Image (cartoon, rainbow, N blue to C red; front, side, top):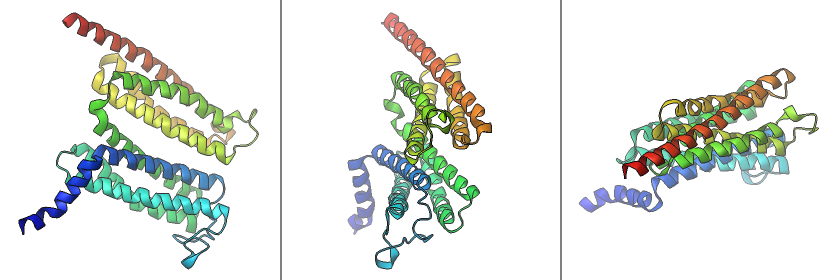
Length: 292
């Protein structure tokens, strides 16, 4: 009898132990990112209303559950991946809640992400049944917030394995990704005639990379360094948000300059961060050598 009472928890714990909670969280983060990019693809191709404005149904197959055309497939596939991302979010939150060795900060982040998920689903339905720019924008920013919550939680669970070298690496990724973001933006209109769906999806992929690089550098940098080294790291995440915000509006010529200013400030921040962290790493290494 006592075995039966413990069996569900034992099976649950055994599954998490085998797979690993950090890995579960990482997979969830990847699925959230994929859902965002597929949503961008659906919007950019004009497929958001392709399922004959049905939700959650589509426009073909039994009970209209399947797509009937290529545009419908984009929207249907976005919903399909979003469904599994939702299951992963719920599973991650339940695992964090039930496992006693999970950092309570991580639990709070993923539970908040789970709470926001039904809101995001409702907004997704509204983008089909109502479709206004305000709803579309709120749907996007809620997705970015969920992504950020899971990104921060993922960094926290892997933090013990991350070093100053990872901070430098994250900043280097940011330095490489930022010019790509500007190149893919509509600001380069004189060289690229149309802001195609492929360009939009690639630019948002780069945006998520920038956000990830900034958050990793900031969180791990605060653990590994002190003093003026941390200042540019703390500035990076808000600057990425500014780049994302103005980048979404950069089809408006009046907002091209704020976008370029934010991008330039972010680039300087990444460069300053990499110079300072490399110097701090060298100092720490020299101090360690002398202490021996």
